Image (cartoon, rainbow, N blue to C red; front, side):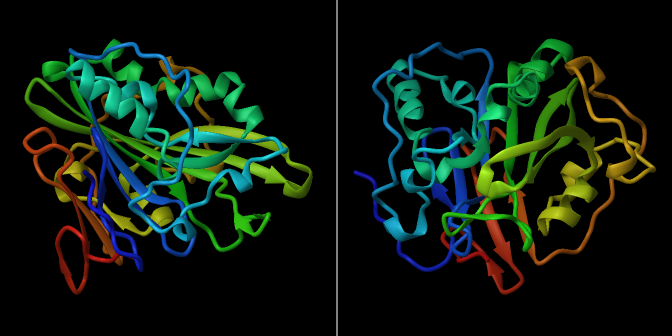
Length: 287
């Protein structure tokens, strides 16, 4: 039986093959961390699985179907369902169900979910297996929305217009981290029109500036992307072939108010720790 989680603040909340923290202000996940075992992935149907609020959490801390009814907003998974379907059959089935909790869902325009760019965003994890000799076929991923004060409000909920993802893997014993930013510029949200959708490969430092997260030094060492110009001046990715898996410049670290650290990526299942300047530990409240 799952234990209940107390209200007030965002705790590190475990699920099957992923964990996350909720933003108490925005009521969406601040970040989600998940592991992928490419050697034991399974194909399972999503039929008859309902989107539900996590009963361990107060319903008021989660955005549910009231946001998505009778409009063009889709319910988008942060931790991709297909990534979580590994391990024993009962384990994969549990992960399949867990992925549909609203704590793992953010609103995305239907144009995004039905476009070729969605395929690009959703296939980043597949690309690393296809293009890189990943050690032990094991990958760890972080992802989430970028919360901004000027995000458009719809039905009383601020809708994120940017999302981020970091893919972490080892190649010949060397840890590597690749970061991506998706921007969907929402114009006249009340009419639910999608103006433009762009996907960029970025540095961890750039994600830190946007998300106010601080990523561990080990991940910065694995981030070798060289991008001298601003994101707005770059050419978006048009295909998986545009991804640069190998560059030659050490990453950098920054000082931010929230620190997310990862215990050995596959040494402890989803051992994500959320740390503030007052201390660290599982269950500590985060902004």
